[in-house]
Length: 598
Image (cartoon, rainbow, N blue to C red; front, side):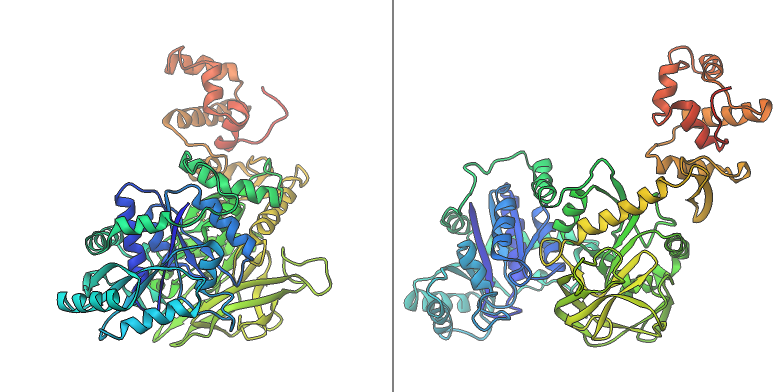
């Protein structure tokens, strides 16, 4: 299993740019590259995924056990030719005094050869004791080579190479000149996510080309292959990527927490320029629990699709305040869905979006307005770092049976705080470590909504993905098992329309083409011209005869319109697979349910 760690002597040495460039350059060589990122981070992994063309997974010694890290790394590395792990901060930096959660500890656990990226600005002979000190500090760590970064020119490079060759036994794997084209845009919360950059793909390609020109990729590949075999490593790492890649986590997650996948749920997920902070293993865990992930664009979509629940991750809603406010239709649609008890889980940026208003600098805009709070952005972080939470009895789907509740671990990083919090508001968490909403509480609970500043990770301190999907499933089943006369709400262009639990209209006058489209979407049916012809035939027939048309009446009519090869029973049932034209067709046509055909 070819693998290596990209680390540095200190933060801001350029290791992220180098890691992105190496991923892109190795991928351009035809290798399947699996990227990992040490610690809690969304943005670096998004760039690494852009460069490798594959999801990047996080390895977090604070939130994950050594066994979990090893299992995750082995699982996804087995599907690639070479694996790159990008560290965070410096090689020996970490929260623990003994370095047990440092990059070096991760390198030791996974037996990763280390490539040290050194910012060499202003350095010549002094680079030797730096390298020697890093080697001597922990002899168990194998520093396999260095990449010199931010060089001032060829003379500077020559001096550094001569010093390193004379005083150390470390190979120089590359020397990268100072180049503004390699820079990644930064702002108040760090790097700008790739999804916000219209030229992200081109920028990554440029970085990859520059790195390939200045780094010896052959030596990188060679040192990666020098890593020893890991315990339990498969004999062959060649797989039929794609489905195997997704099933790897899915199979493991199902084994850990079996679910009734015969009862799938449709889970909306906001994914756009404003909201993009999602861990890939969480998304796989949601799918493993039986959730079909349905993308929603908060900037462009005017209404939610037919979904059973909603997940709103973190992001930068403050950067897109005007666009989010301008999409009043979706905000209103989400607010009404929440009032109709749609299960919703929101983290950080998602919490901000569900608030009444968002204020940053001199601007204040309206948000969804489902939660009785306002959001204020600050110039400095309000909460950052790891959090430890304890669930309260108000947590809708996380409360454990133990009196003390369920203890969860996660992380937070927010520059905002809540204002004008409605008295008596319920909270899902007691904060044991971290800041949360007010230093003591986090996780606003309203109806079936849980919205917090904390980011959770399935398999890293919680099992939230399975718990949330099970909660959504239970609410969906409750609705489906109501009495036959009970009403159900279908959102049509943002407006609720009453149907029974099977989808038949309660009121004939509520029918419209938009209703037919919304009902078809809920039933996963793509309407064609043939569907519309039959829908309007059914409505016309009912208007004339005041009874529903029999299938034989449909065949008689459409054999003349379409010809006998299409105007037949088989084709009519193929058009309407859920109940045939007599049931599904009449539902879409907005006709009332009857006890049988007429």
